[in-house]
Length: 318
Image 1 (cartoon, rainbow, N blue to C red):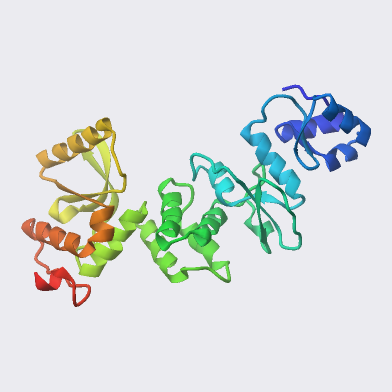
Image 2: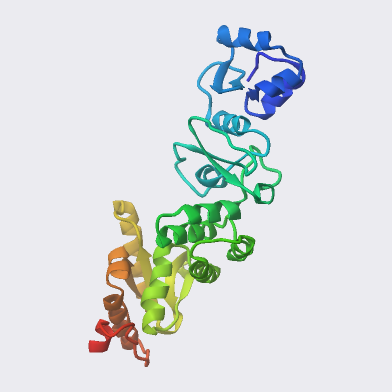
């Protein structure tokens, strides 16, 4: 794209997706009148106060992200949902653009969600443009803004499940924070994520169904080869040839549902039984789900007994 600009300013604009600030233009030798003329003639467009797109036509997403950073000023970085978008943790992008600035400054910018941080320098991911918080800092920022613990858990498990980071790196980043909500609970989530947990539903199954009722410990995201094809089982009891799929989707396309059923049938031909549980089973009725799973496990050779999680637990009556 050709920009109506030359010299060092042109190089800078090219680096910043065609976006440049007033301060950068003045430092490069342009005058206020030259800037005003380009704006008046429609050769440039203002994206934020003191921030311009040196081209015509609709600005792409990257231009808006650069404009947000330049408007927020020195030391500013994209953060929260916007950083999550750039890291591949969120799709589609959030409507608002989030930036974090040093705690020594306060700005007001329409269209931007501005937050402050005392440790913005160490939270910034080096070598990435436009500037953004690191994957680990982004995940923890979002976890702290989450409405519920399940939402916070989802950010951690999703980041590990998409292989954007590791549980160990998230744990290190968490230790650097003096204050963090649900610290003990999130440490448990990270321990589970290190063992292969990739979703909130999988964590809930581990915590509220398996652990709470003393069921055998399953392995998670286990690689299984069936008729030459590799599949991954959410939870797998290898000793008992029992696979458990945890389905958090509200609806399945017909093709996807057929593929799941076909996989289960193929596994059945090799002696592997598959059970499937959703949010209602795990979140709404964990005790009943544990009791059912225990009965199936006993049919397949488990000699233990499930443990009631409370005096009112159906496992006690059974």
